[in-house]
Length: 244
Image (cartoon, rainbow, N blue to C red):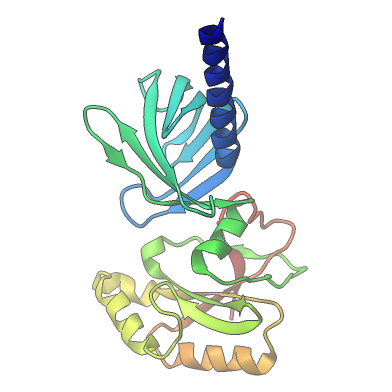
């Protein structure tokens, strides 16, 4: 009888542990790596998982076992019906590391937990940007990523910050732009442009100062991102705005 009760207790403790681990994973996880993975998203629900990547959408059932995530009933762009990941969360449970286990171990780029795509974008760049609203129709920024030089202007802990993908300020902007254009084929260089993603609360003086710095570089076109009803940044990061 004593052994039986011990067995039941162990099952209960294991079940509680698995439930707690599962609760930490439930939510949306994103990564936007520049390597072979590109942008991808994991949506963990109580008993199902949805995975989006450049190939499309994959659905599966999932369970947690210690430091492993087991996927079953996979339906998507793979011929496998079962997969096992090893996973690791950081102390705040906001960063997730995943590896696909098998004959070849595949390491995913680190994922960030976020409410939606735009929340992920802000966490990824480390500043908050409340985009200004435009009532008129906006044009999409339909350019390959290699032609877009992003500049971000927003706030972190009430501090005004202007940064690029590479640096936390614009002190070396001209050199950054020069290096950026060197990686482009010569015939494509005239099509490069800035994508200025800036908070609505930035003053006119601050905005003029930013634009002056951009205009001193060899990139001639500035595209500023705005939001309106046609711009759905919660589910994707296809930027809309206008030339300035």
